[in-house]
Length: 242
Image (tube, rainbow, N blue to C red; front, side, top):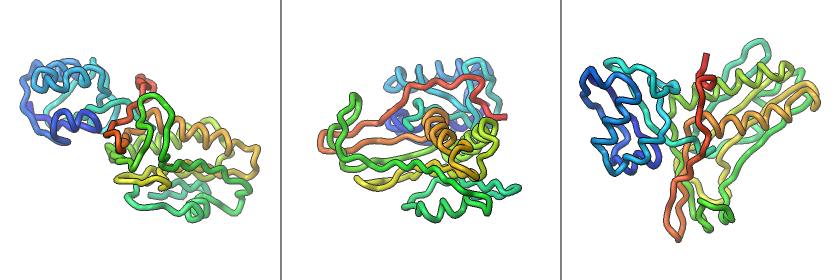
């Protein structure tokens, strides 16, 4: 059985590759069996593989899930952190390599009925007083499992709409690549007719949910060295998309 393996963030560094095609026997037919096989093949990454999240063909997978010939299987640590218009409910999901324009995004998710837009945006910090982070950061390196990240952004938007029916437009943007202190990194924005129609709550939910299930990671680089920032949220079966 031939499968394609993808490794991200810390695992990519430990394994020494982002993508590998391997042959496994028919007994290696589940995530649990594959995890054990990979821990044997890559002992330097054994501890990380033991706790890594997994995905099969761009959807979260669990140890009991089965693997088939030709599948794409990704392993990655917990997450650190296009446009459609349908019935006046515009949506934007992007993974740009360059700076984004806040005004352009606000305009894109506004409709003639929009009276309020709540926007959260993150920027690169130069100093951090928090365990697990470098005290001084020169720049960040962001990477993503891009097809799955875009799918999960759409899932976050669907969850927002299920909770706040009056939300009109939704934008979720995560920059990738090398970002320096002061650069914008991420954005979640929601529009609605009035400020009390859920746009505040929806934008907060969107950025928090992005940090849970959208597979994006960052590496902090500074004078004291470099470190991948990994989260601790463990997805459940309920986090799978429809």
